[in-house]
Each structure stands twice: as structure tokens, then as C-alpha cells.
Length: 416
DNA sequence: AAGGCTTCCAACCGCCACGCG
DNA sequence: TCGCGTGGCGGTTGGAAGCCT
Image 1: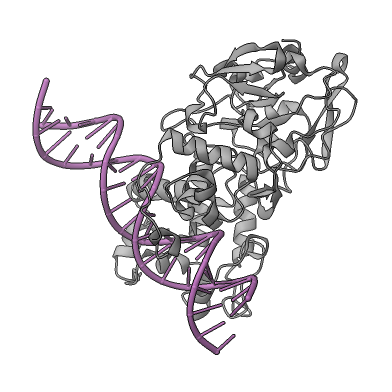
Image 2 (image 1 turned 60 degrees about the vertical axis):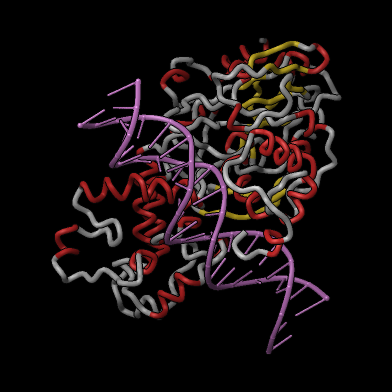
């Protein structure tokens, strides 16, 4: 793709991905991780270039994607981040857990821009349209990229162009780092990007989080699943690696919750987990009946919120699953919507649950549990500001708020 | 009902940065 | 230092779906 040698070597498929292709890619990554993307299509048996596979995974198949419509808080945050960062969508996306740069970019171009104009705000400069059109404000001729990069709060300068051109890695991004002195003259009252971002992120932190983003090793779900004695002993999942999927935060400075004393089962919910938009905060747990005392049971948590377009998911769920298999083989995340009835077998009991009952979040366990896996890398967001004082925080949807005690829910689901 | 128009978004393109030999 | 391979990013596009007349 795009001048990459791999694209010229053979006739490669283009265009939309078929479910079969998705399945192949998911299977492959579940088993081996992606490793070198250029080798993925060959190993996975796909007539695609590595770049296309990577894009498909990142933008669509990755299990930690939130999907669904953007909440108002998210939109507000995007607007504010755009005012500071400009069209650096990946940087903006780093502050919106579960959202991709492509998604945000599309939202901006199709929706937010329009809304801002309707409100009389120039989407490029974030200034009133009248002021911009008045001629005082020059709209840069070299396109939106520069116009937004050199946001009004950061006077256009070669240094800023340089900053825009060479953005920093997440850990040392402009978000986390003061601007170069040349961009913020001494004695100037112009706030730094860091300060602006801190302010706006602090504003949003009750509803959205991920103040910084770090890239760290994550593991294929099969490895996630290797939580020893999860059900059999009063241990926690502290050994599990953290995932960017908020529904996978079962470790990391974790707080333990005795979910079901009868099962002697503690669940550790990360207190480092970023807060979530309320659209995805309602969480329930489903544990298969065969969990108790089953040493061989492999556990993993997953999320699949693959709802498309108008579907707003108020009930993204955490599913802690034992080894299971799917009647229909591996389903693409996009197929695993709550209303689809994929049959799920739970271990040897062969108890069937409809997918909608099983809730979002199954990673294909047949492939997953067989795997000897290499780490795969996901962009893992760590929200240091997240404060979760109890499981009730996880139940912000109106429906689940009615269920007064989280433990009741868990207990119920455990027993079920 | 049908054709044209609009909207939305998944995927592609082109470019750049980086690592490695 | 250079060339190559690769990953990542932002801009753009094609087509499916929805809307309008």
C-alpha cells in the first residue's frame, strides 16, 4: 500500500473486507499476535497487504474499540483537543479510549465541523466565523493542517510548524511536555499546550479519561486468560497484563472485590483504569457455571462493542469466560452484536448461551486458548486520574443503576 | 417506485520517520 | 551516509445507505 513494496509483489485484494478475511485476521492475531505486519497476510492466508491488515485491525477488529455513537462529552473533548492539537487525530484519539484516529477524523469531517459552523464557529481556527471572515484572521492557504496546527493560541511560527511536523511520542508528546521556549516566548501569557490540555482534560476527567497514553506490551487474550486459580483460590488477577480495553482492567494497582464469597472468587478491578464515558459504563459480568474449582479453565475478559452506526451501547459488558467455542466458528467483532444469536458453548458442559445473553466480549477462545502467543502491542491508555471507589462506578447506565448493588448483579450472574 | 442527491465512513494513498544493515 | 523495509499519520476517495423529490 502507498508505495510499500509488499503491495507490488502480487495482486492484492482491495476494498471492503469480507467476514472471512476478518475471521482469518482475527484468528491469526489471536494465535500469534501481529508481529511484523508485512508478514501477517502471508501467514494468515490473506490477499492483502500488511498495511491493510494493520489498518483493519486497528480501526475495526481490535477488541478494545468502543464503537457506537460518540457521546456529547466525547464530542466536546474532541473539539477542545482539536483547538489545541489541530488535525493530529492520533494524538486526539490517544485521549479518547476506545476510539480510533480514523473514527475521530471522520466524525470531525462529517459532523463536528458542520455543528461548529452552525454555531458560528470556524472549525479551523475555533474562532467566531464573523471574526475569521472579517479578514483579520487569515485562513492559511496551505490547508487545514497548518491552520489547525498553528492554532490561535499558539502563534504560527517555524517552531510550531516543526512541532506539528514532528509530533512526539505519546509518552513525551506535547500533551505531556511544555512547548519549546521558542514557541512560548518568555514572559508571554500564552499558555502552553500542556497547560491547556491539562485544563481541558481535567474538565473532562469525570467522564472521559486517559490523560496520557503509553504504549506497552499487551498480550493476546490467551495469555490474558492464564490467570491461575482465578476461581479456585482466593487470588487475584494481578498477574494479568493491563489492556486498553477498560473491560479488561482486572489488574494493575487493583482493588479486590469479593464478588462471590461462595465461589471464593475475588475480582480485581484496576483503580488505574481510565474513567469511561457513561455510554459504556454499565457493566455486568457473566461467568460460566463451570468456573468454580476448574483449574483447567482459562479465563479471559473481553469486550466487543461492535455496534455500528446508530446503535448506542449502554450495556457493554464484561465477560469473564471459560474456554468456549463458537458454533459458527470465529465471528468478527462486527458480527457479534448483542442482537445476534451466536451460540456459545461453555466448556464441556456444552451449555449454550446466545451471544446476546453472553454479552459483548468474547474473543474466539478456540483459537485463543490453543495458542502459544507472542505479545501483541496495543495502545494502552493509562488514566492516572481515574478514581473508582467501588464497583458502583461501573454501573452508570440508568438501567443498571436501578440494580442497587453491584455485588448482587455479580452474584446473580455467578450463580446463573 | 424510482432516480438523484447527500451523508457517512471504511479503506486507500502518499508521505514521512525510524531502524537496520 | 545511504538505501531499504516498515510503521504510522493525515488527507482523500469510493461506495453503501439513507433521504428527498
